[in-house]
Amino acid sequence: MQFQSLHKVIGAEVSGIDLRQALDPDSVQVIEQAMAKFAVLVFRDQDIDEHQHASFTRNFGPIDAGLTLANAMPKRLKNPDVIDLANVDADGNIYAAGHVRNVSLLANQMWHSDSSFKAPKARYSALCGIDVPADGGETEFADQRAAYDALSAAMKTDIEGLVAEHWAFHSRNMLGGGGYSQAGIDKLPPVQWPMVQVVPESQRKTLFVGIHTREIVGKPTAEARMLLMDLLEHATQREFVYRHTWRNHDVVMWDNRCTLHRGRRYDLSAKRELRRCTTEDLICPMSVCNLKPG
Image (tube, rainbow, N blue to C red):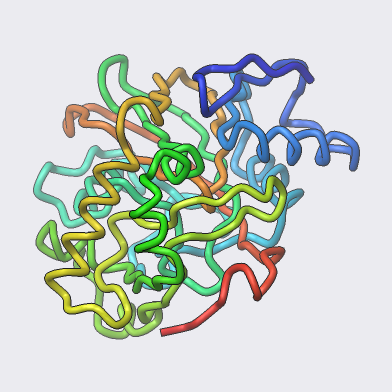
């Protein structure tokens, strides 16, 4: 494999690998080492099906179900480990702009890390572009290690040891609700995570915030949300962001523990089909991650 840097602090394009083929242990290790360095990897021209997608992802840990735990909508895909992010129904019809399904798809346009609202949280995600529009719908990735490094010494002191609450439906409620049943909502109660963490593989400190955060333990709601908004604004400055322009059969892999990402605006009447697999973070030491279910 070869790695070509895409941005001064984040991202590399990978060549010399066919994701349809089984990975040997050395290849898995090379990819993990590259993830520790670049946090985002782009694999071009990977015409993989949903089963190959899941098989590739399993090299890096058990599959995370994410919000599908709360979603009772009919599924288009056969492999339950692959999350369908298409704006089309089971018959291939594009959802109307006002369809409830678009709430979740539009919520992905806010800065977040996958499954930060779960325990365990997510480690890696691999997103495959199947049929992407020619214009719009890019995905941006923000390096939270570089964002932490760029904080003032005073801010680093202020946030050290703070714990934020993450809730899956905070972002959906901001957009009017996603049509989830109370039974589905109850499957994903809020969880708490330290706002500053250490990535085990690189030993770099990273911010851990995003649109799923709604409270800070021990702070009044208003003060907490202003601090969270200030940190999110800082963490997503252009100097920390790689913007990916999709081509069909791109696979983009990222580390949710030290990046934020968001989709960009696109024409809701245009077909946009992507699929995602995510792994659970089971390797983070308890002393570092301070796992505290809500």
